[in-house]
Image (cartoon, rainbow, N blue to C red; front, top):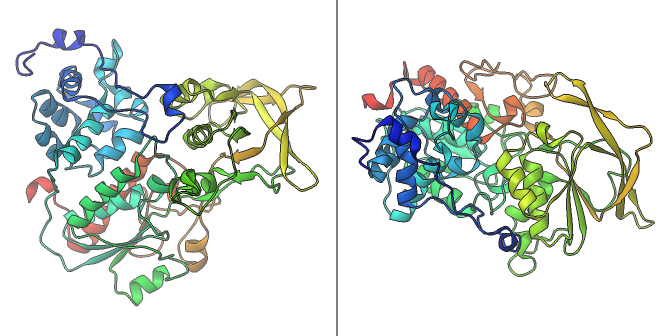
Length: 483
């Protein structure tokens, strides 16, 4: 079909293109990526489904305001590199966002086609564009404004920080990113498994930021190695953006959480992802508890819980449980991740809460005492509140427990920068219009402000902060198209 002559009726008759994927019984034995990506022909067919609305509401549904209609039109016309160029005007991490963003709750949720048919697969097309650039060997980098002579320190190298650093570099400012760990990427590297986001993709998209002149310094713990005040007063940075995420795990506060075999999802995933514990002892000297033939229970119902339980399955767990106090309908995880977990043999113990972890004389975990729940009236979140069913307690034998109920903010910044205001939950307080904190020329965004959220929301906060920083340092911000 010709993208220039196809009618709206013909577009809507095209079925949504299904992305190829590994067979579930094959993929539970490896850490290779589950979804395999659209072919060029599939991408063109999917792009032809877009009716090119006069008012593309999908753009407003995207936290970073990608020009969705325009990059999809270029795909439909077969101009894949043009689509790369267009999408990179707003997002330099398309291969990452196309894989991990919850498009079904954002841009695709408001897609006009979705009112009567399946919405256009915007996320799959975004992924295709990023992957096409990488596989073609061509590199398209954003335009860079003339140097302003101003310097900005960006603390952390997760999604909010990378988005902020990218925009600041395009505005012509010198940007230095400080990362506490030995490898860059933040939660993209340590928190999301290889089978959902291959680490080589993160590294390649980081290389694009290096080509823009952004400097990265690893093994620098801001708040210990150097403070925010020292960055400004001694190192001479004109502004600081804090995007350190929310990496302090919450526990449930029930008896037995100190037993050997009980750990946070953060620790489990960091060991497996960043330290390659899945290949112990071949290429890693960092082990995890042996899951092979064991029973592993993950407590929680979000995307991190799904990542952890699917990782345990790949490490050989005979039983990999999700224990969640509400029903599947109330789970905050993406439907795609729940579907994949069920396909891979994960066992869901819903409407269930843990009461106590049980161990042996050597303090090793052997089981968890649980209680069944039923749903009552909605709580403040709008979800129905779980209520205990009397007399429904039972013991589930398990060898390993992974806690995935959320995270709080790391206290280092707060402890060493007391003039930055924090909330009762110890997240940094900002002006949501500029992301500026209570400290002059210090901005913050992402999970350190909102608590645990999504990659794309963090990136949106980073872009908001970058525009405000630029306006403060170099006068009113120009749009990229004006250069």
